[in-house]
Amino acid sequence: MKVAVVRESAPGERRVALVPDAVAKLRAAGIEALVETGAGDGAWLSDDAFTEAGATIAARGELAVAADVIVTVGRPDEEVVTGLRPGQALLGMLAPLGDPRYARRLAEAGVTAISLDLIPRTLPRAQPMDALTSQANIAGYKAAVVAAGAFGRFFPLLITAAGTARPAKVLVLGAGVAGLQAIGTARRLGAVVSGYDVRPETKGEVESLGAAFIELTSVGPASGEGGYARALTEEEREAQQDELASHIARQDVVITTAQVPGRRPPLLVTADALKSMTPGSVVVDMGASPLGGNVEGSQPDETVVTENGVTVIGAGNLPSTMPAAASAMYARNVSALLLYLVKEGSPPTLAIDLSDDLQRGVVITSEGRVVHPALAESAGGTARVDGASH
Ligand code: NAD
Image (cartoon, rainbow, N blue to C red):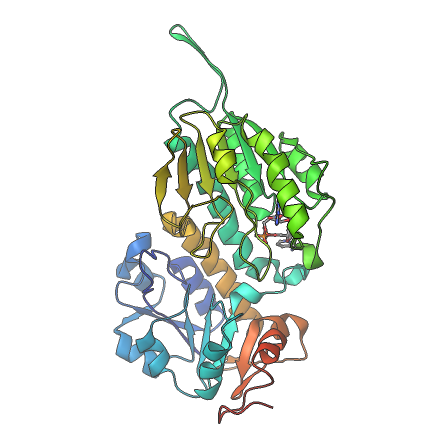
């Protein structure tokens, strides 16, 4: 079986889907790796490093012909998709939900599409494959570092002959994987940290990191399904924004990480709340998206300074800014899933079994059909090879 690693093409993407260590591990299981020339450049992984681990470096055209499975970080570019042939598999963070046409296209091409971002995260055996968690950990860490970098004062308490610096006050909104990592990182840098989430079960996790948990009186518990938050009602949203504003006004740094599955990120920091902050304060919005983020007016990859001197940083692809660590962790997720999907034998082959709950969660197309329940529903039924649905 041959796995091909393509060079990522999304603007600014520096990660690579497999690293040399993972290549060696796959080889030990009888899986060969083909790596596109320069695929690891963005993560400081040379073609030679891949070759030493046993990979074959190849041009893009050769990869498409020889590969059984193409592995990627994000969606591959048009050239790769057009070159896919029936029987090939595509494995990456394909973000298929909300875009049934993409899945239908892959089904029509006869491709087995496997989307790592849909891994059923609550299954213990899926944890080594959980790329959302591995990448969110990196993003949370980097968000705290970015905030510290933009802040014109110290995070820790410093007592020096030239004076004493008080520790920075940092508030992290949203205490999921990224939020908890941001809290831990800000704590390690010596800040006085508090955290908030609508899921009350996060209180213990926040406190165990040495941060204070903020409880709002105006919003009740809002735990949803699968460990995620539910969307708040309009009244709850307004009450939350108002009550949070009084906490935000007292902070030097606010890092927001709140997400609700399938919805635009909730707005937590309003323009009025930004106005209440003191000059020199920093806000990092990890929820920033073209549809809006957790902070009013923030845009991904854009930094603005408000009239009252607050720096608002819309985070973009934070994991890609730490490409060596992010690729190493992502490659572990990819190789764990590949090894799980492969039937041992000589040679090993991909054995898709949709009676398995883990596979049902990640496989979006198989044998010419859109098979993922969430997509089959939004596509109005299971797509057949001819594109019809029923
Ligand atoms: P996420 O990225 O979807 O959301 C980040 C956080 O934002 C969540 O904690 C959520 O509660 C919070 N949030 C949403 N709306 C909010 C609002 N209006 N105000 C304040 N906070 C708000 O979540 P995630 O980090 O991907 O993970 C969420 C959950 O999944 C966690 O419980 C995590 O422990 C769980 N998880 C479990 C496993 C596992 O069981 N193996 C693996 C990964 C994650």
